[in-house]
Length: 211
Image 1 (cartoon, helix red, strand yellow):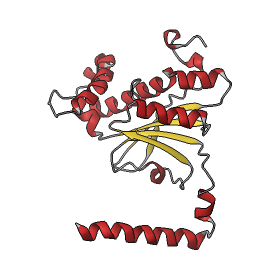
Image 2: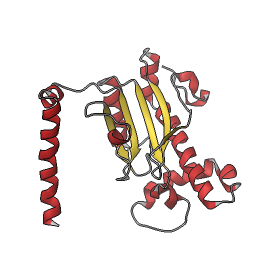
Image 3: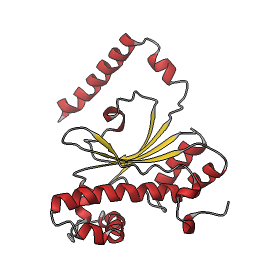
Image 4: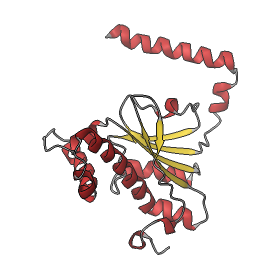
């Protein structure tokens, strides 16, 4: 275990040396500040590293991750990241990226009690309830699981749009596009779910704030 730990520090030094060899000004430039064009809201799963799977270098992606890439209106961590990304960093794109084989989504399909995380999983179950007719009509369990991953991402994109943070930005003329993606761990390919939202009129009227 200790060897594994120290090996991480050795790998860091090698990574630094490799970047400096390619660009001596690499870290000096990063230290001057950040202006990433993307906010990534993804799953905490260790197999889905945001920068790596889209080939983005440090400085291009501002990241928030939690179990099953959820956007919960009372989650102050997520809201703080979103607010900073939109109002300070002025990101142009917010991407909610889920992935097939997501353990959190899988857990929401069962009635098994796990522990404290049950309180988080309940929010994912709410998404199932909203899409129950469609999901229950899929007889193959794996296909239903995959579709649940997709509809969960779509619902989270809508939940980003429902926030006053995004609606105020749109109302003020700020250009922000919201997207829903699903990453396939089996082949590394990202699927765009084509749920791009870019203004208040993209929302149902009941969610449109009177700004």
